[in-house]
Length: 172
Length: 163
Image (cartoon, rainbow over all chains, first blue to last red; front, side, top):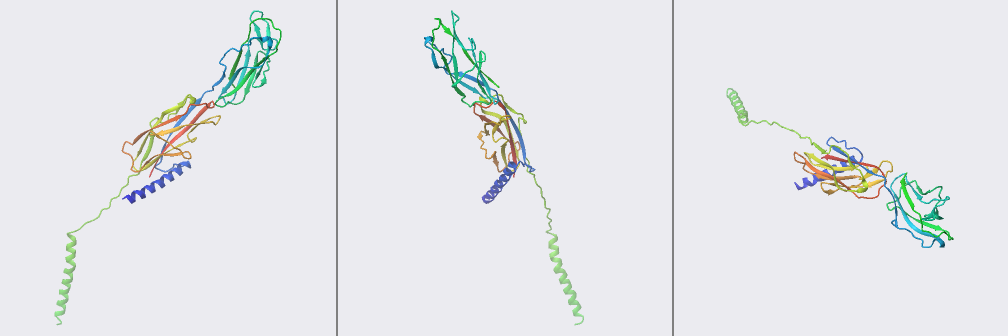
């Protein structure tokens, strides 16, 4: 009996292997085969973010007359899972004479400055500049890019100056 | 002598006749006939999904999933059988445009399913089930993560093969 069980078992495993082979070949046509299909579907929505590791803290220049050279004002992390890519733009509040500028709170005087993003000079056709135009998604951890600011030393009007830079990401 | 021989022949003939009749009479009292009967029960096996093929939808794959029921499979077979799983994309959701894969795992009746070349045997039964079959849950899990935005899909096929 045990022999028969072993024999039957071997036969069954052989049948199983044949069945497996049949299934792998897309067969499954034997009379005693039956199957059901369970469809699955899911969606991954587009999620694009920019983050600033300085968390919105204000970069303060205590004496602007001394000027500044490539001072890091933020590290921007671009993350986007859109397969068509994304665009990152920068808008500056006190754009004046085709340049981004600090603006005196009382005098209204402006002190122009320049920016570099990921080591490249930011060009402003108007108050909005394109920082990144990517045709593909980023990796899981995104891409970190440094934003640096420079301005010349000079005899500026005494005042309290400020400006605000806004960085925006949009999927393509 | 000439008259004795015919008598002897008749006697011998009677004797022979009796000799044949004796076993014949014995056979008559112990008669039997054989009536062979044969029949077969064709192996009948099926699997059913109580969700009736409804698609299980995950609105945001990035959130992941843990042991989500995608079907309850009823195995019903009056002979030894095996149940196998195959999937279209080898246990991966596949993005319709990007082709990106999001891997998942399955558990059948609480036991993790291991696919080899897209094929897994989840039940090996040598005796068949009872009349009502055996009901087993099929669940899916996948990790939360950063996945490429797309519409993803896969199809799990459950097949029963009888011996």
